[in-house]
Image 1 (cartoon, rainbow, N blue to C red):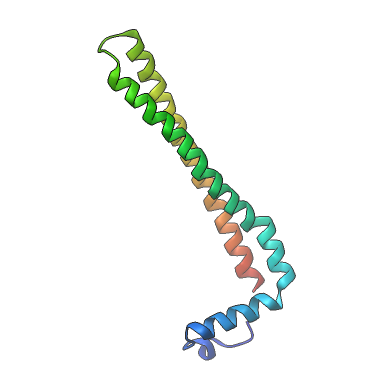
Image 2 (cartoon, rainbow, N blue to C red; image 1 turned 90 degrees about the horizontal axis):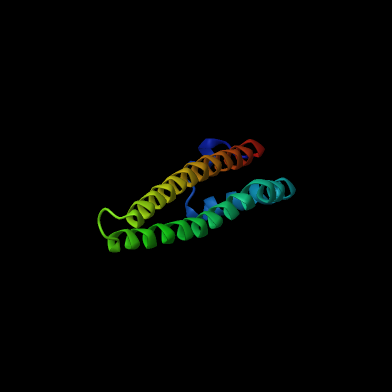
Length: 117
């Protein structure tokens, strides 16, 4: 950053965009490397998360319909109930893993960009 805080304190929207562009264009190579190494995988993980969550949640919804249709006290209902519990466990574990990886990559990419400026 070439300017002092007092100089950029009262920049408007266009001034912020202009200053951001000048910072990014001055370190074009390093910003493209950061984007390729950290930000692109972050976007890919986010998109994969949407698809995988949809698949798992669709299976959970179908098993809940089967559980509602199964008669009380039958072996089939017990199997569907156990399957539903394992699907919910997989869903929760996937969400925990996703959030850990997402937060880790988000913090790494943010800190990499901040420290290069």
